[in-house]
Image 1 (cartoon, helix red, strand yellow):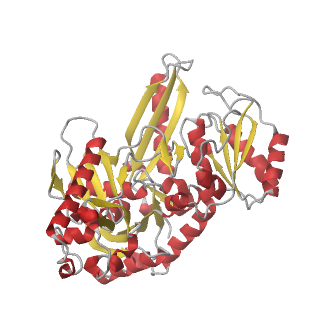
Image 2 (cartoon, rainbow, N blue to C red):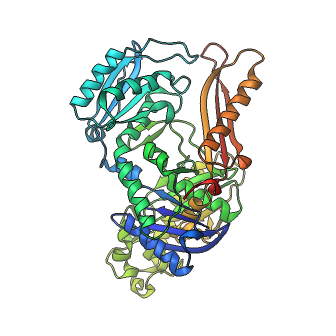
Image 3 (cartoon, rainbow, N blue to C red):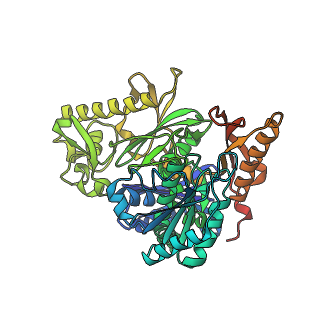
Length: 518
């Protein structure tokens, strides 16, 4: 059996999965320290279906810790950004176009150095070890504990990033963490560099958070491998999470979409995940979330690492209702819903209250919203339906029919039909689809490179790229017999010489839990 947990801003959901069957499911309020909410959710599972530690093959957790830390600019480590590219790239130094409050939060220190490659592997300039040692001395003197290294076209050739890390680590010692852009972002220097800096700034927090999550699981008497959800709907082990916390961004919506696919039976559909604070809308294609094709702004910073194509709006079960129902959100009472909403004896009119008043669900004490007028409730519910329908329409890429699946505890806010979109499907266990998505998640491997393809060599280059993606999935813990290529793109780049072609391949397989040692 597996346990899936999703930690949201309002609720912490947990499920016990016996194969593909939901054996137990609970929803608990997210605690301020988060780990207490996880412990409470695990205790709730035990109450529904008793199990022993030996029964559990793995625990999968999706968390918003890291994206929240970046958005709120808290818990970020002092970070230096070292870019290898001189004499080119100097016109736009690291941290260009970052919000001022984030620049201050990470104690931004940019450094430019020689190095870098052209797209075909040719060297821009050789590394200067003495230059890197001088930068390391300045970084050490400033008390900086995390370093992000980026090199021009490093996804094609990461040699200089690896060498620069070796040189600087020898000067700075083992207490300084390094993040390399070739391991994090895609083609595109500034966006890849930004993603690497964000990852570096989160490294220290990742150690504390991962240790806390592990302690909450073991403290509940469960001795099983622990995994965290990635932002592409697949899993990573705790050591990977410590090194690449940025990979957890947007894991909540992807878990919900994967769970929706399993519960509804649709492998292509729009998924509306209505939580306590926001509604996230994404599209499933072949059972996996459609990925954003361009840059993604995270907390005002442009990045290009893999992220789902999701639109979010400030509508959820905890959204405040004002102006006689004409204004819904975007602010929310969040995890204080059980204290502040009318149906729980509070004094704040929320979306949950109007849903209960409108007969959409049985939550709390319905008699406590008897004083809310039906007109206010219907007006607010109409606003919610119209705004969600608008977002789903914006996510469509064709006029073909697109089923709509609603999941999340807040999906009771939605009507049975959305205007222009048809029936809203709510599968069994829809309220904990995010935890189910975490529990059934698989393991992936991905490559994204630019190749100079000589005449007659295309087939062998494509085969090598696909095999590299498969090998990465297996190295990440996938069962080799289950790995398949689920996404493949081949795009010629006419503005570069040498028949340049960008190839992206993604392989996915089932987690080989039986091969793991407890």
